[in-house]
Length: 333
Image (cartoon, rainbow, N blue to C red; front, side):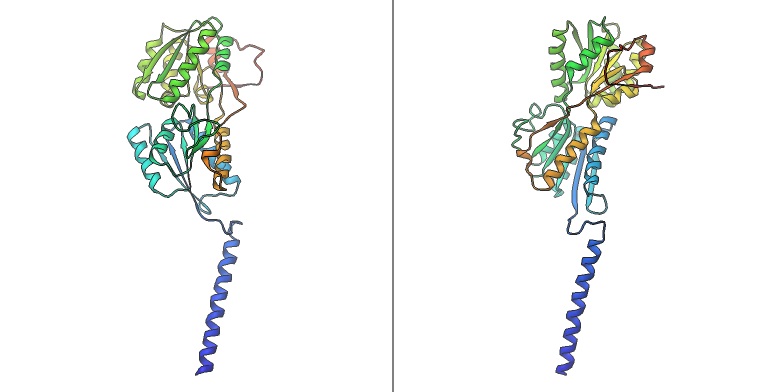
């Protein structure tokens, strides 16, 4: 009996050892991700439109290129508020209690909601114009909070230079924006400062919802020579409505980013949001490796895209100057 018990114990120990070896081999063979835990990422987005979607795509592409793949070692929870502030706050509260490794907050309202919901979860922001004015960080150089990421601050002076090159006779510039968005308030103030130096007058039209966009645009007809659309989440998401009115009235539109040009606006010198998302992804990788958001400076994009819509230029009878360098010409139906 003693010999039998000794043999049985030896067999049990061997079985446990083999089982352990089998588990190790299986883990090592699953795409080279041995020893990596499942990373949980929340993505909160205020509204769906091409620029913000491109930033999200660029972010995820960077994670994938660096070994974080959904279903293997990455779990992504994506939530879109569809422009509703109460839904946005609900999503932020849910993410705050979900024990996520990081959160990507796309656009200023998303970042504000998420920062208000959690002071612990590392928050990466993108498509946020002024993180300081939005009270997300103490300074761009040293955030001092659980928030860091990238700003989409526009090269407004360059955009207005483009406006003057394409529409040299312009005197009055209409701006349509949501007065409730901090990022838009910042851009309108900058636009006014730039306009003064260029002899231009700004005429404002504010909206509180996408339903107001058509009326706001129509209110500018006959009052302005050109309309500027900043990177305002509400107005950009309703840009087809803006362009429907401006095309009929033959009013040129200069936009803060290229997705509006692709829909039919005249042109922009603006942010490449996919690249901005990739840049934010690189910052997220550093956080996952142990860097603290409070010590990571807010980054901005250094190279901007010049995009002009040939179709719209022809419709408006506008000649594209030969001295525009590095311009990307597109055509729309």
